[in-house]
Length: 307
Length: 302
Image (cartoon, rainbow over all chains, first blue to last red; front, side, top):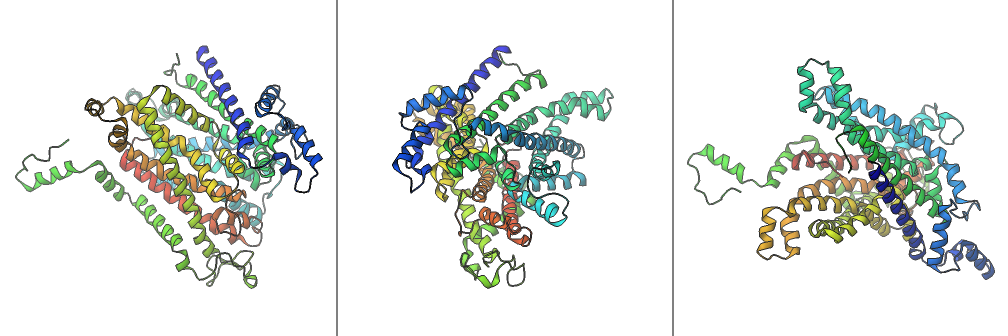
């Protein structure tokens, strides 16, 4: 088990290293023109361009630049943002709490409601409760995030005037963004829970439980739900990993200065150190969550053994 | 399989029975699908929207990009069914023209992903060893980026235009296809009929495409339907963020972004394009679910 975890950590680190190299090299190869000239603008003097080039380390060879980038990254130094003239690392750390609130808030809400809806509809299969719930689930599963966000603003902020449109001033500012993200999450989890629950309820050991006279409540909560959880952990883990990288659209709609906003602004502004930093963090969070999921499996399902 | 040359049974009832047995997997799946009312409704809605977009020019009377300053921000009425935007352009017209772009993004990006991803998966599964290792590690790398960020990053690097949006979405969808194909190939590689073909001296290419690929088609059709809707959402998201199609071109995501600033006094600008995207995505998902039930009730996507 320890051996397995160590191996997985090594693989995860290699993956992040590979991502760092790719992100770095792609930025140098794929972009047409000289980044220093783009940053300096059209009317910049040659001295200014040279100055910017030296600041960014662009006057050195690419392998040399890569080496500097990687060794500095190891110490948490991801360079300075061109736009803000502040360390990239500090900017990301500053934005992270907003993103974390959105990610954990929406995944918690979505998973709780999703598990409940999924379990109830699986038990009440083929009743009107099930049919109505499933229609709603397919609908919310299909609504794109950006439209969901705008419609929630239209209804609750513009129409009913009960919640603010944008900003981060109070807890009320987070209600609509978390709702936007968790509606889709709820639909995803409900669908998955229902399908797995139906499958589990047909298993032989559930029949055994019934025939020895266990209450239906006990069978569902103690026996069936536990097995249903396994595939759901994967999805929840991937969702958290994905959302920690920034809910780009939601953050942009609700004006929340999280990691996603930082990443998209960096790309639009061609703030290269910032782009490298955010992409590295986003991929890192995702790889890390995958690792957590794989390790969690062993605890939820003792049948899984990694040797 | 059933021997087609066997003498036909004498009575009518048995003849019907043999008809059923001669039915191929695809005919049977198609029949199951056609019995699914929800899925068929989805398919009809989808066809209507696709046709309406293709024939947008014939169906509409106004120009999708021409500015008409006397009819700015008109609410839905008989003349403008979905209202007009801040430049006086008819929203319905723009929704129809916008469909051309969104549907193109969905179709071309997924076609590209399948054309590249399926052969990669076949090669990885069939040859195994180093080939498999290299191909799958590259796919792992792509999967290490969560969803939208990779696409945004690629489009940001390559430059925001329709062509790059399609390429970026295709790259992001590659692992879905290569992993699916590889998995099925691995399970079929050792079967008797593949071994028979090998022993008769068939070339690897022939075995992969003539003998293994047909077994994957069912799963591929299902995954393709479901991933086209993802691709449409991603394409619209990019335009919404200002990284896809540039104004004044009509595109659903870009129209929503326009409507954002007018939520307070012109709700219709953002509402109708969004409703259309949702309808298309919903239709694709319903059709995809129907196809999955028809082809293989036990299949798990992605």
